[in-house]
Amino acid sequence: MSSYVGGAGVACKFITSSARVGDVKVEYFRGGRGSPLLYLHGLGRWAGWDSDHIGLALRRTVVAPILPGWKSGRLPARVTSVEEYARLLLDFMDSEKIETVDLVGTSLGGWIAIHMALISPERVSRLVLSNAMGLDLPDLPASIISGLSEDDLYAAAFAAKSGMMVATGDFGGMPLNLRESEMFRHIVHGQRNLEVLSGGRCGEAGLAERLGSLSPKTLLLWGDQDEIVPLAHGERMQTLIPGSRLVAIEAAGHCPYKEKPNTFVRLVSDFLLDQEETVAGSRKMA
Image 1: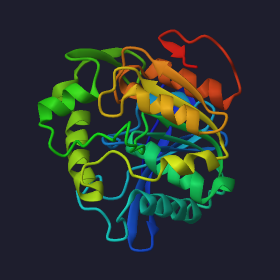
Image 2: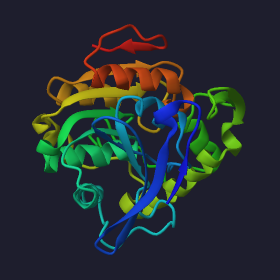
Image 3: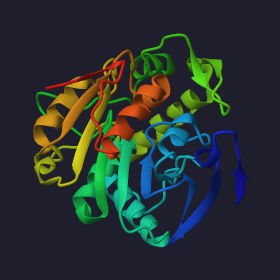
Image 4: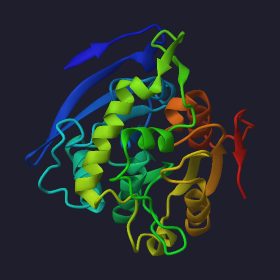
């Protein structure tokens, strides 16, 4: 176990640890204070305790697992579907004695989060789905990313086509070349894992008809320039999930938590605190 303490106080303090769930090892980051928030990554796994973790950890104890198989490149034998990933993470919650959570999932993590909330709705207090995979409908088919070149995958995932400024641990800024970044390398590895998991398909037939039974209060966040899971998927989810609210994050692609982290964290935090405010760089959808 290791730890890091930074100048932002408790939100910068975290541990790295692991849990055994049967024969599966689940590595995770944990930090912050307050009731637990389980934060599931998407195609690209966590590289460390990032600015979005810090922002959310100001008012929640953030638990951010690395999906088993996303580090080694080999999926656990028990994980043969996204629903099995959800069951594995519910077992992870049991192993860490976490009864209920606010659940945030982005991309593939959103797809997993949907299944977790369907399987055990009593364990999910609030649900945030960001650019969530999962829908596959005749008039709104899921993307298939298995055949995309790295250049095409990059173009589909990010609104920023060159460099961008990102926050550092001391809340300064530094330029990041997204195309050459470690995060994008992780997305490429995630693309390969998704090929094994679903043939590279970003959704499943039959999930849409189950969304009406989701009971947690739900916020949908969407980068409005996502070409992997387009905003139209978020709009359809909003019509299918009872009482859900959809907010588009402007000039962001599939990873708004990275391209627009301040907007993303503020929107999630407001939702968790039952606050309503106008957040620059976002727009509420009908």
